[in-house]
Amino acid sequence: MVYDVGDVVQHTAYEIWKQNIESLNPKFHIDIQAEDWPQYLADLKAGNLPLFIAWWVEDFHDAHAWIQPFMASTGVFPRRQGMGLRGYAEEYWDPLIERVAASFDPAEREKIYHELEMDYYEFVPSVMLYQKVGRHYERSWLHGWFYNPGYPGIYFAPLYKEPQDHSIEVMDDTDGICVPSPMSPQKGWQLVELGADSTPGMISVDRVGNENGMVCVIRHRSR
Image (tube, rainbow, N blue to C red; front, side):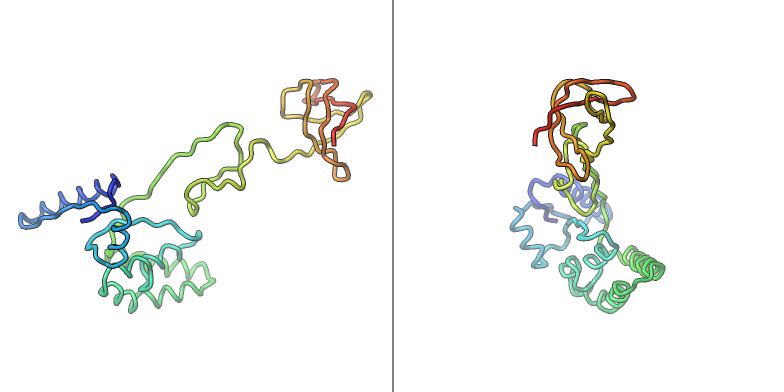
């Protein structure tokens, strides 16, 4: 058994396999070896590994993104698992995969994908080990992050530090205008949007009031 050097998860999984397989028969013996990632990847692509651990992340959020790479004869894993599996996939799985990929009927797709998954479970070309979990930490003022199973890592485009909705309700006031503000009222500068026909700008706070959560601001706008 060969694993990527430094990968503790792979090494631990192989140790479990080794212990259980060798316990079946005293004549069974398994060696565990580490390879650098470039060599490991080359041996994997060449089909030189009798047993290997690999992982997969969906390219798009659909069952096809899992069925095709694991079960189609042209899939990334059957291509590396020997002619026996590829021959079986060509005869039994490929027709169903092609049929379900062209179907727009949710009921038919669910039925076929369930049939394929159960056949994979019974045939055991691979053993599914675990679903990786993780944690996400962020500051309270960061907004826009959401869990995306199809995109590992951080997608920065939707992230922002303040609420993006700066629209306000403007009310007449004897000395100026009053606007709702999520911030603690204090003399200073706030970025507010004065309406569809007005240019957003900076308004200086000359007077503040707490009535009904309103902050009164007057006089100066910086464009």
